[in-house]
Length: 198
Image (tube, rainbow, N blue to C red; front, side, top):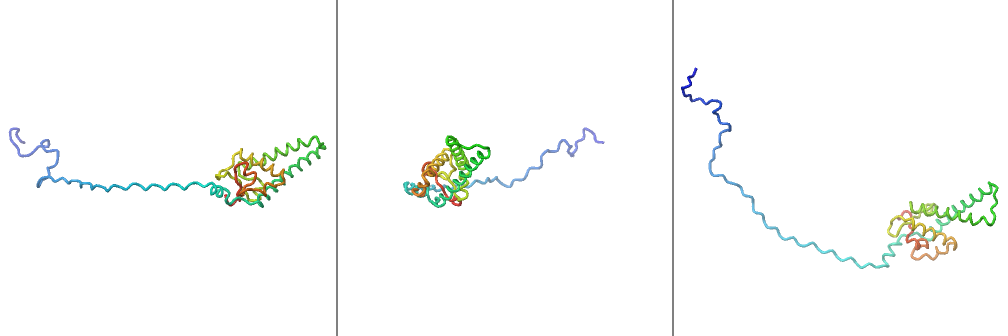
């Protein structure tokens, strides 16, 4: 046993340093300096865009009707739609015959009003949703706004009015279509194209 008054060269556990030995330094510490940034050359200003060429109305009109449907296809589509209307008239008259009703001359305005209502719905609804009627599908035609957008209900109603006027004049406006646009196109502000051109 060791006496308390004896001095020992041994270090006790609590006398040990907590950190490791300090590294030996050979000389002064040299710090690396970041390289000085080189001045960038001033970037040239971006080139100014060229001014747009002046709009020419004639070119716009030519582009709007470019690829529009010809008179032959329009006439075929109108004839097919007229055939659908005639079939509906036969169904109405046949139905009244089967019910034993003989329409008098005073009943014809009501029949005509029914046929006009049918014609309006038959034309306006398909044109607004799909851009063509059954006759136009058969003739591979599609109607669009001059911007290429689908027609609005207002435009389809005006197209229907143009179709009624064309039918009432036995299709004569088709032969005087200006720049590839029929009376229906002019009234509604639309254009009729072959189906594969849309």
